[in-house]
Length: 413
Image 1 (tube, rainbow, N blue to C red):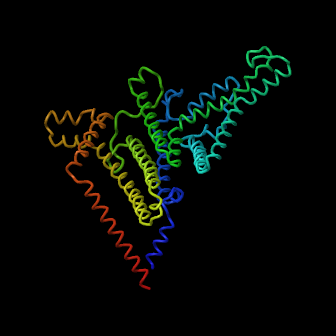
Image 2 (image 1 turned 120 degrees about the horizontal axis):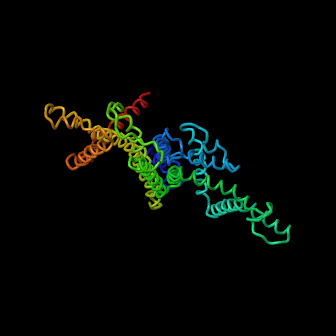
Image 3 (image 1 turned 45 degrees about the vertical axis):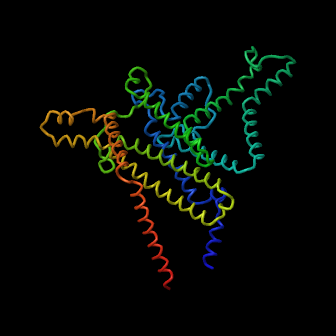
């Protein structure tokens, strides 16, 4: 009788999309992906969002306030200004304060768009048509109205620009809306990874998640290319380049240098975002394709919960493991130098110890690549799936023992 009650209670939770969206495991995956995405973007702006302090001119850094500031200075010279207020776009703030308000606004837009996705097709069509109509009316409404009334009042046809009389040059009414759309377009370019990433996580679009990761990689690639010494010496881009020479390893227990920490954190956060966001979509698609009878089966619900719980545990474990292996790989160049000190006295060992290449960025990357190839080759020797299975089995046994102890403690009174 008790088993039937438990099955009925479990059967109340089905694998329909409306129920799955409220499951704490699915929400945990989506929140994890959201936090990692925003954190990654903030880390990218801290690392790649500065200009050369020697020259404070415009530079293609990942900082929207630089571009908008240059545009605003030009508009002030012609008695114009940006339509959006400074507090809304982060102008005038320092540090991370430049990004929080735009990120908050993007979050509100994504939340509204996600809520709209739950509505019927008729409501979505009306809302989209309304937004498009308002945008077009704001752009050309006042321009067309003043032009039409001007021709009616003068009983003549004329073009709305290039006229001798000022009241016949109606093109001025287009400048304000165009500036607003230009400003929104620039903000969209800079915040494209966050906008597409949030849309992909909460609207369950794998393509949007791919766009988010791809645009981030493109931004980092362009920044690295423009900050290369050969490019900087021939073209004045004014980017504050990352240090070429790596300092002493003092972070993470002496494993990596301080210059590498933000880069490693960006890589780990990108991995967490991609894995958590893609996993949410993958599991939702799996549940959606199940037959209707299976979606209400308590056994399928229980298995689905176990899959989600295991994924959350594996995400935390693999993130720690990947970070540790990467730190060890970046430490591998120092290990080479330490090994060469064993052969002290030979000319070859002395040259290796004093080699500047091992202290430079590309020397660290090459040595890390050798270590990663070595670790990857170990998969053919060490049965990692068997080891991870044994670890998971031991954890399940420990959890089962703890549950049995707690249940016996409750039953004793």
